[in-house]
Amino acid sequence: MTGSHSARDGRRNGDNAARGRRRRRRSKARIAGVTTASFLVLVAAGAGWLYHRLDGNITTFGADGVSRDRPAPNTGGSNVLVIGSDSRSGKNSELGGGEGDVGRSDTAFLLHIYGDRKHALAVSVPRDALVDIPPCRLPDGSWTQPRTNTMFNSAFTVGETAEGNPACTQNTVEKLTGLRVDHTVVVDFNGFAKMTEAVGGVPVCVPQDLYQGDLNPNLGHRGKRIFTKGQQTVEGHKALDYVRLRHGIGDGSDIGRIKRQQAFVSGLIRKIKEQGVNPTTLLPLATAATESLTVDPELGSAQKLLSFAMGLKDIDLHNTAFVTVPWRYQGARVAIVHPAADTLWAALRADRTLDGKDAAGEGGAKKKQDESASQEPVSGAGIDVTVLNGTHTPGLGSRVADTLRSSGFTVASATTAPSQEHATTEISYGPGQEEKARTTARLFPGAELHEGTAPGITVTVGSSYSEPSPGSTASAPPADGKVPTEVSDDARTADDDACAKLSYG
View 1 (tube, rainbow, N blue to C red):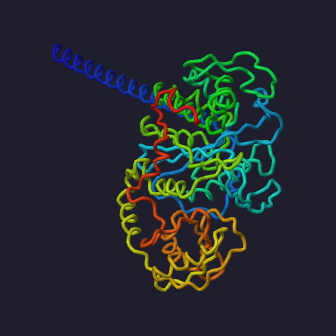
View 2 (view 1 turned 180 degrees about the vertical axis):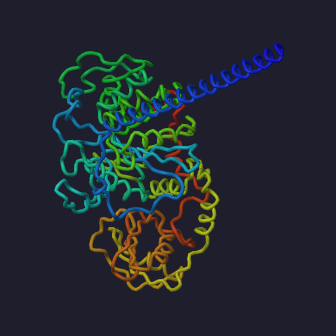
View 3 (view 1 turned 120 degrees about the vertical axis):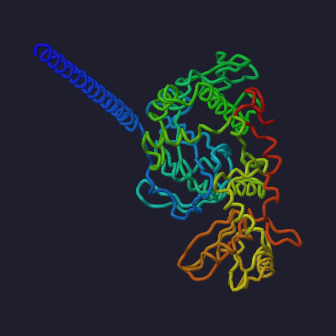
């Protein structure tokens, strides 16, 4: 009996010990689970706190200034307008260079991100380029009258406010290119300087010693040396001086300065890539950037900005290119050259790279189908069109009417438009006429389509229209999809040497 009791007691003690071990394991598991959950909550809270802090830095501009008369949404790639503002207000006043509180656009480029998210092309627009500025919203809610043959950077000054008018510049770029701008980002001097500090400086190449008088010709004397000839790394105020330099280097033109700015942005991208696109790299950069960025409402949060930035991480340096819109001097100003510029915009709309390759990504199959359809002969059967000559070219309206008739369109009349200052061809159409208007637009690459209340279709021919050669039916881009060689040959990629292609002239 005694042995039996001892055995039972041993079993009970063993069972109790086992239950105790199981309770301890469950307790440890619960503790581990609670600890893990607590850690995740803390991480989420930390991320939330960080996003909240960055959100507080971001400024947005009102969407009520964006034109309602816009190009169609992009089906493949996307377009981001980047504007460098030289406003002297706020912290920018400490960085020198000018006087006054009116925000001005010192530089601007349209960044096209291809549909495959592996290619990108930045197209610089000279600030002195003569363009058409469409109606723009003033601070009091009224809208300006359209202006023609006006300097591009004056769009940013419409309303004469310290923050500038990014919506007006966006409207102007959309009118110029026929491309829909998905996002607009304004970077001021202070933000630019801080971003260069956040990455530890950017490598640049200076062809000769430069002095204070080169940066400010009004100084009246050469002043101290601010740059020594050769390659060097610059950040902060000195980086800002480098990209603002125009006089005393190269040919002293704004075009030459654009070349150096493109080289600088290339160097900035290289530096970020070298450090790695990760939170350690992006956090100080994001903090610096958001303090001085003004963005459209669609990018108006840290989470949206970070998501957008991470979407660019797979773009290789060699596939990140920079060009300047085709141009020529027109007196003291710059004229945009047609049809070379129109061919460039058409290539971007089709998601074709500088060498004509299709970079549309997943949407490529549909784009190819659309392109194949667009190469078929245009049939205008059953479409009535009125033609207005919006240029100073005599007889152009009649010749366009003949082109339309040769494709089966019925031309009601061909007369002179109220204004002969149209740069871009415009096609207006009444209710229920959009499909016919798009058929008509196939004969006018780069044309803008506008829906109105008046019935029928009206083609107002702009100066960018290139008359078809005998036997052809439209001024289409080259069949191989390539942009003009004067554009592609002068392109810079982000992996080019810092000293290459630095100055025009």
